[in-house]
Image 1 (cartoon, rainbow, N blue to C red):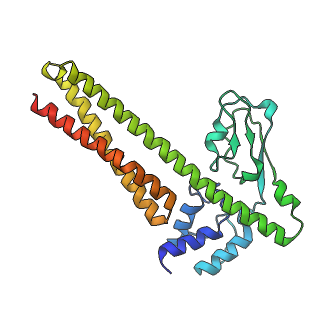
Image 2 (image 1 turned 135 degrees about the vertical axis):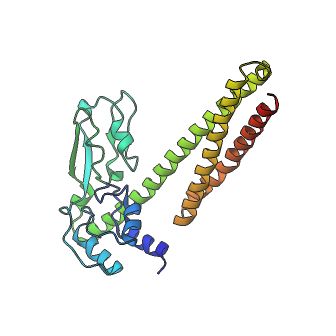
Length: 264
């Protein structure tokens, strides 16, 4: 089995709560670490069953869980006490909390993985963790297994969607910053700043714009390579769509810096 296939198989066994209790930033990073030899006993939400399945897959010996096993949970916001700070929204790894600044927040229980990451940031301590209603409603082992499988699939999909959203917002922010630098350069050109003592400042601005453009292209290329490596078609398509714009801004930045050099 290739390393990529092993990582995918391990990730399939993990509960996809994205809680970080294993010491890694989500289930996939932990799967990658296990493939490289990390102990398999660091997943409390997975419990003994996940531990046994990981041992069978990887050949590692079964060890006691590093932390006690955890039954499925859900976060509940005491809405009357919520101050609308958005800290829990920012912390949720699966975007399962709705709300806006200075407005009441609420948890989408069906999409909550019970990761607990929203609890600590809350400045007024108005978030409780309760047994997940869907888990409590399950009456048979088959129903409980079905719930866990559904939670894992939904948690994985929503976590990837959130990561893609955050990466897209970060790229958009960088591109917007580069555009502002380009606009400043064009305004400087239109006022003849290149022929004045202020040319030193203009050149420095263009150097900064070039550096930012180079970093943006590098990030998009890294994201594209990462998406290919993990077989994430959605992330790969997003990176491909961003690359031409990043490369165009890089070419403009290089041309602007060359122009500043020849005008000295």
